[in-house]
Length: 146
Image 1 (cartoon, rainbow, N blue to C red):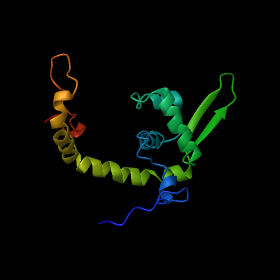
Image 2 (image 1 turned 60 degrees about the horizontal axis):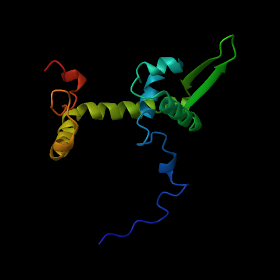
Image 3 (image 1 turned 90 degrees about the vertical axis):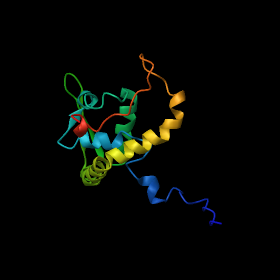
Image 4 (image 1 turned 120 degrees about the vertical axis):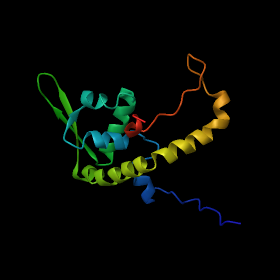
């Protein structure tokens, strides 16, 4: 039998509680990538992040700002302008994110196969599209010509 997990395993002093790239916030890494080449306005971020609602994007930006990864600058002009940019700490996240993206690209087919295999028994309960078929999983962008 395994040793029981300690109750204080993830107390507030645990390093994992400070991890800025939370698995629950799937947009944080994408926001950081969007800010890689300089400051952006909220509306600019919305273009590549069109799948995220404005409310969730705002929450993600605030969380990244709180963690010291993003700096928010308000320009008091005739029309107030707000820009977001990476801090030095935020820029230090670019390399680990690039490594994670490279790993994902390398294992893309395996990941999709695993998901497809997992979802197969559940296909009968999956919502069908207009033709009555269950939608297929997406192809890797580099494999779209196959």
